[in-house]
Length: 351
Ligand SMILES: C[S@@+](CC[C@H](N)C(=O)[O-])C[C@H]1O[C@@H](n2cnc3c(N)ncnc32)[C@H](O)[C@@H]1O
Image (cartoon, protein in one colour):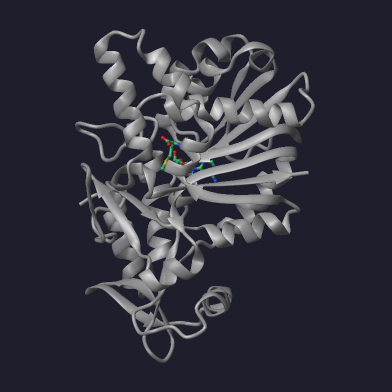
């Protein structure tokens, strides 16, 4: 039994524990939370899950071009800063910095923001050359950068925020909780979650429901406040509010590359994640003055922004193993069953 099991047990003795509170404890308990451990969860063998960054550098390369066009649109300022909250190992920043070219490369600054000790440790290595020359910097989650001209980008940040599952039981909204006997659904006042669900699914069927992320508005306000002008871009899995509601979106647990819905088992020892409600993310950004929204699948976004013809020509020069790696990386990002259709990219512009 781990210390976190004991803590959860003590909490349960006082009454049911809402799944969202369990998720917050399991991921972010300052000493025992999954994202506060000394060892990182990312990768293939021996790890829990992989992200687009483990598949190779192509997401970073495509993003470098997208960021360069944002820099162009801003009038090619001398300094263009990219803030990445939830940056983990800093691999996306590394891939962007390595891919940037010409005058854009001289203007580019990268701010890694994450309290995850394993991520920060790996980021120091991955970003080494740019930390040394002052073009990259590590920030804590509570540290606000000065208002910046540039971009706020994230990969799988919002799906890692604690979220509470709700269901329509035919007469009322019920929320998922953990009790001493196991997981259960209990009636509770849904507040803003209920208003949102009713707005996007006025006539729910029994079993319909979604996840509600309490922390999303404050985080969006904070990130939007950092960006004086420029691009907001989030890559994550999730869907529109109505589709999540009819699908009955729930929490998922990732452990050793196996995914299931048993979120209540092994707190602190497995990843817990929730679909992102992109309709809500867009509405929150709208409230902060952002516009020009575009939400697409990752597959579509890559096909729109990556110079596939040029890459194909460049790859002919690579030795065959490296060429195959690039092809595999591209397939991971674009194949529907891999990341291509499961992931969405939201773009917004702060004028
Ligand atoms: C699913 S991981 C993704 C890591 C990385 N972006 C990747 O793709 O490999 C989510 C990360 O978000 C971090 N995180 C969660 N809430 C955060 C916040 N409010 N600010 C910054 N980082 C946060 C966690 O510590 C964790 O490292």
